Image (cartoon, rainbow, N blue to C red; front, side, top):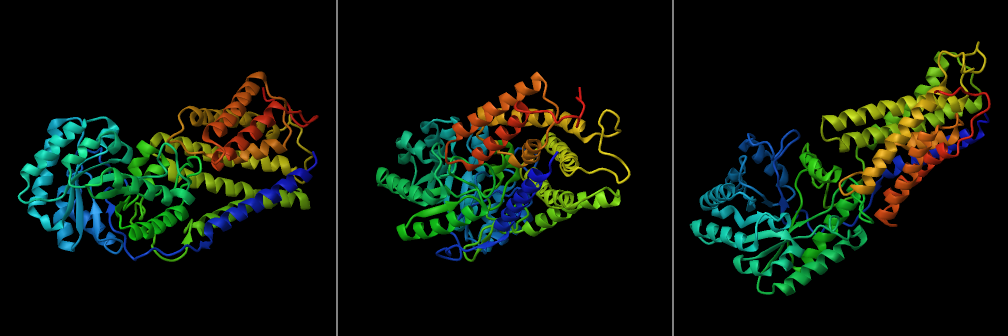
Length: 526
C-alpha cells in the first residue's frame, strides 16, 4: 500500500489541528463595554453537585455572601427566581453588601407551593425593603403552561396585600407570551420580558443579535406604552451546539454583552443579564449549552470581562501540550520496539500522530463539557478509549510498521493483525455515528454535534483499504449517510457544525459503501 496519501493527509490534518489550536489560544480584540459594571445579573447559587431538584438542599448564607462578593466587582444588582433552599436570606445579605435585588417567587402548578413561595418573598421584602429593586411573581409560567394570566394576577394581588409598603411588582416571561396575554400588564407595575436570540424559534446570529433585541424592546415599549419595560433575561452562551447561524462561544458571549451594554445605555433600556455563574445542572434540561450562560464558570472564575481582548480557550496551552505529548507516543513506541522506519513512516507516526492526538484531546474536552450523568460519562469515556485504540491501529496500518526482524504482516498467521482489528472496529464506528446522527435528526434541540468523536474513523478509514464490508454493515453505512445529510438539511445552510457533521458522516459511510479489499493484506474478520 502506497503511503503517499497517508503522508499528505497527515500533514494536512496536523496543519488544520495547529491552526485550530492557534485560533483558540490567541487574544482577539473586541471593543470595550460602555462601563465597568453591568446593570444586573441573574443569580442561581448552585455549585457543582448542587441542584434545585434536591429538595433537602439548603444553601448556606456564607455561600451566598461569598458569591455576591465575587459579583460585586461585576454588578451591583442580582435577580433571583425562587425563595426556597435558603434564597430567602439573599435580600438581607445583599442589603449588608449594598446591593439591590430583583427578588423572585417560583410559581408552578401547585397552589400550596406557590403560597409558601409568596410568604417567604413577602417576609424577606418586608424585612429588607431597602434591598428590593423589584419583586417578580413567576418566571415563564405561561410558557410552561402551568398557570393562566388570571391565576398569575391573583398571585400578584396576594403578594401586594402582604407587603408592609408598596414595592414594584412584575411577572417575567418570553416576550411573545406577553403579546399573547396583554391583560396581565394591568396587574404589574412594569413588564419584564425575556429576549434570548440564541433560543428563539428563529435563532439570530451574533452579527444581528443586538439589532434584534433592541427592535423587540422598542416593539414592546410601544405595545405596553403605559408600563416601564425591563429586559429580564438577555445574554449569549459560551459553549454548546450551534443553532442555524447562532454559535455559542466565549468570544461571541463577550461581544454580545459589550455591544448590548452600549446599545441599552444609548436607548435608556433597563436590563438584567443571564447569568452570574455557569450552572452544570442545567445540562440535564438543555444539553451542554444550558450550563454555559455564566459570566463566571462554575468554579467562580470570570469568563466575561467588559474590557480588553478575549481568548476563546484560556486553558488552550494545556490542551496543546496534551496533543503534542500524545502525538510523540506512536513514534516513541515504534523506536522502543525497534521497528523499521523510513522517512514516510516517521512523518505518519509523528505528524499524523499529532493530528490524531489533537482529535483525542478535542474529544476529551467535549466529554468534560457535555457529560451529565454516570451513563454519559461511561459512554464518553469508553468511546475515548476506543478512539485511542483505533488511532494506534490506523497509525500502524498507514505507516507500514513491522518489527525489524519480521516480514510484513501476514494476517492469517499473525498474532495481531491491524487490518483485521480495524475491520472489526469499523462497524462499531459506523454504528456509533449512525445512532448519534439519528438523534440529531429526530431530537436535535439539546444535542451537540460530537464531530470530534468521529474524526479519527472518518479520516482514517478513508485512507486504508480493508476487506469488503458485509451487507448489514453497508446497510448501517447507508443509514448514516442519509441521516447525516438529513441533519445538514434540517439545520440549515448557516449551521457550519451540521455541515461538518454531514461531511464526516458521508466520508465514514463512503469508506464502507465503496470499499475495495487490499490484495493479500488482510483476512476477513468474520
